[in-house]
Amino acid sequence: MKVSIIEAGGNVAKSLVSMILAQRLMASGDVLQLVEEREPRSYHVLEALRSDLLDSVGVGAEQLELAFGPEGVDGDVVVVTLGIAYSLGLKGDDKKATCSFNLDQVLKYARSIKARGMEPLFVVASEPMEATVELLTRYFPRQKVVGIGSLLDSLRFRKEIALTLGIPRSHVHAMVVGEHGPCMVPLWSSVRILGMSKEDTRETINRLRKGWHYSSSCLVEAWGDVMDLVSRKSPAEISKVFNELPLCVKLFMRPWLAYQMGVDSFFGPAGAVFRLLAALLRGEPFFGPLQAKLEGEFYGIDTVFGVPLVLTINGILGMMEIPLWEEERVVLEVASEGIRRRLKELLPE
Image 1 (spheres, rainbow, N blue to C red):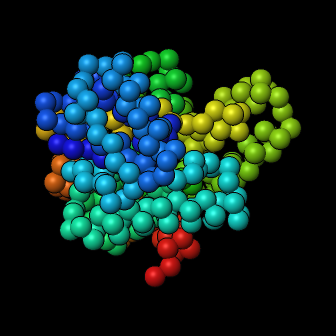
Image 2: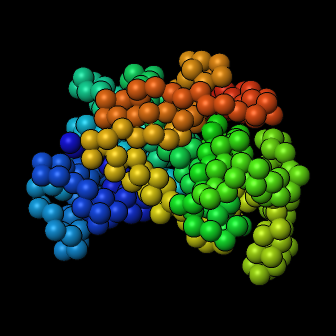
């Protein structure tokens, strides 16, 4: 199997490559193709990166291939980490410009790969997540395009629960669907805690929620409150107040707050992609929540949406319509409408 990683010199891509090589996931004959733009500096960046990687891990040089520009991409799996780092704190024209630039870069690669008659499996780790998935499905079958946003958000949801309870994240099962953004839907109905009965789990969930019921409008209001907090408080004061927020708000706000304090997020996204690729490189199906273009398979939703699905190297095998609480079903409708509205703004027909 060949895995092409676009913009391999970026932080997410470099972290991902390091994880794959450190865990020795590549069998004989597997290739990691490191892709950058066709310009003089890119050649030196990738050559230096390959040399550094070969110094640190025991793979042959033939398993680390370099490619330059869209025309060089020929992987069975294409990991998209293109574009300018996208922050939840971006607003207005700055946010639109960042989205537009990133989507233009994706479009360039999509057209080149399509023109050569290829249909790889695309794994999107770029922002804007839903718009990138939508754009790629205009050139390739929707079963061949997924985004890692809901997988990353689910890992963060599990982390927040584990941190609050003082237990390992591996002891918590929890899932987030919807948007990788304000219209994410944390599914409290999916929460399972190792060694805890259903009754105790439900009681724990009620305590963790602090009486707070999810809606995208509530998240937007909470976001505004935290932004105001950041502008007026010291880091120590921010941390103290932040820890008192409802868990759902912390799930959404913690990455942005870290960014405001000067810490970019790249290990998390790289780790989410790694989990997916680890299954595929072992020849196994991946089960979990990913962004995909839906046509009614999950509670009638017909837009790009994070849902639990089964994925193989050949694409999406199926989507799982898991049981939900009634309040969660209502929120799905609100979330899907919000995503459709943003897609129309970013990708006019």
